Length: 593
Image (cartoon, rainbow, N blue to C red; front, top):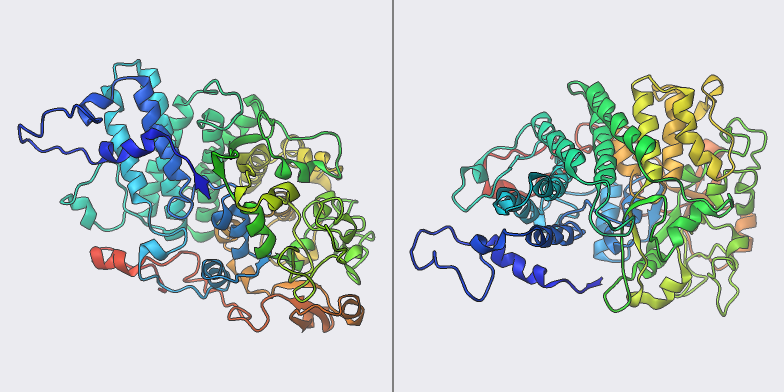
């Protein structure tokens, strides 16, 4: 990814490294560059300083909190490789990190710098705390100062929530540290203590950020509505984590999640993107080049020719192994029933059958062979989609499950390769609706009115029947999961609506359903008819004992993660890197590592 940053990105290190030495000579203000004593004067100064927090928060590997679907290797689409939604090809070392984590074969990293989405980004935290210690130097009204403090505290709360979700206990730091600060050698702070600080930061942000910075719904600064979405996301994670893993007062966190989401629903300016075409609208929003004033997008990252480009389409094109059968089978039939109950289900004898009488989001997420021309996947050669390894070349999208993912794909941006400028959706209104519905259901306070303004709005967009509290289907596939049929359907809706947007892995962790990652990564049926249809395909398959030993594609057969073992006492949290423990012997490793 190429970026051209403002002059403030160059000046920021000088601001961060300003000396506090008492030497008289060093107390003289530099005449040729910014100093701490002369910088914090105007709103422009505060704005410029916070601009660099946005740049740092978009440093995908170190501070993975503002990811969008155009962040290449660190995009939410790639995060679904960790889950039971997607299979990946993982041809390079950077890709293989996803493979190892997907199969629970990751090890304790030697260095924090080498850990994907790991125990790093602390320079970002330091920059936040420096800003919070200096904003009040400006001679500005308190409300103006608090706007920028609200931005910084939103970043800090979001950053810490991410660290807690991965590592549990983590040291809470709310001031600038120097090389001799005792906090550098302290033990990690307890999870519940840190999360109370996080909630305080999120509350401050939602109370002090403006509803709009005057830029409409264009990319720019995060507004109050974005802060409320982030709060609902974090509080939902924490509330369900405490409910299923153990912890105090999960109800408070779920109530905070519901309250934050409800404020956006009742008073925010957002609504679902819809042109009245249920066969295309869900897919359409993820393929748009310009999201300016889109009613559903709450925050997005903009790319532009000659300014900031990406090659996300090329990466997505060549790294996706395909959707899993498990994910595909979660889509309801058009009568609103799961495939285990619906008489409309046409089976999976051939791939086209899978799409018959199904939720339209399935065909807008996974490629139906007849849609290849509509998505401009075919150019000079007419390949019979899906295309498997052995059939195509590097210019053709391949799949190793048969369920080729079409969500997010834009042919025009793919052709531009490294000079593409596909925008990145960071947060959208659809998530708000799902967060609210789930939080209320977990609290056992969900009403039909709540369903009608959340889940059923998502279903209306794609022309699916509404979910009715008095007629919730009981899917036998989930009968032994220990949750209500209503929660099953709400979780199903979340998986379908947010497929490929990076939520599934964290959802399984917070629900304490990591054992689902032990299931084989099945693809389409691979019987004699399929082999005759795709004679050149070089794929791996196996007989599925749960389906009468019918052969299906098995994306990871023969790989190091063919037989995944999820350790309930270990794998819900990530390991602390060895160099972190070596630098501070008071830090203890997470259980099992």
